[in-house]
Structure formats: C-alpha cells, structure tokens
Length: 184
Image (cartoon, rainbow, N blue to C red; front, side, top):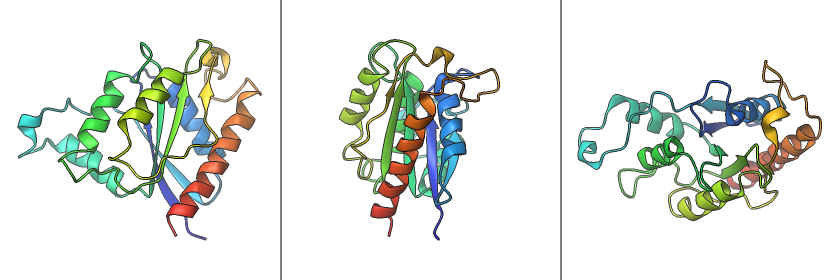
C-alpha cells in the first residue's frame, strides 16, 4: 500500500491552539495510507515580493516541505470571519513565484474551527475563495466546521469531547479516499 505524505498547515501561532490540537488529532486518527506532517508557522517570515529574486531560507524550507508532500490540509481558526494573517502569509509564500505554486496539483482539504457557534465557516469560505487556481482539487464533502471547540481537548491535546472524534475520523477517512482518487 502506498503511504501519502500530507502537509497539515496549522493556521494559528498559539502553543496550545485549537487548530494545532485538531491537526494533531487528525494525525493520530489517520489511516495507514496517510502520514500527516503537522506544520506550524511560527518561523515563517512575512511575504514581500521584493525578496522573490533571492527568497529567505525559511520560505525555501516551507516551499520544499509542501512540494515533498502529496496532499495538503489547511487547519484554520476563524479570525474576524476570515483566516489568520499567518495562514494567509503561508499561502502567499507557498504559492509564489507566480505560476509555480508549491500547492499546485495537490489534493487539498479544509478544516475550520471556532470556539463560537458557527465553527469557522467564515474562515473556510475565505479559503474556498483564495485557494482555487493555486492548489489541486479541494475536497468538497464532508465539510468540517468545528464549533464550540474550547472544551474539546484536555491539557495533553487528547479529545475529551466525544462528539468531536467521529467527525474528525469521518473527515480524515474521506480525505484518504480523496487523496487516493487523485494520486494514483
């Protein structure tokens, strides 16, 4: 069986962010056909087109990590009805230079969350507006908008809100099938 490497990009910088905990939970729940590489963005410098001719080493490392992956999952919090600035920055860094997006052709998944009632829907919609044309096929179903996630994990990042586990399991299983469909 082929194992596909999935870059899981965490759109929050907080050490114990809900997005990081969700990404780590997905990695634990992933079937054997996927190996999830959780990527935090703490060391990724800001995109500046003036630096494209001689890109910083951190940009090159990030792009190489994405290029070495077979697929990508964006795990995003919702900040002011959109994605965080650090996630948008990562998308800008990874999608450049123009026409050479590191995300291009890679099956893509979106996971949004919020401690509030709409579960990151605004962030997911912002990604659905931003990503076409710079990624590969974006999985449409199942959609995942995790609301009220503040009490979903314990201090060690383990799922304690049992209603969350089947949602994450269903999602990662569907994503494995999505990757297999597009990475034959």
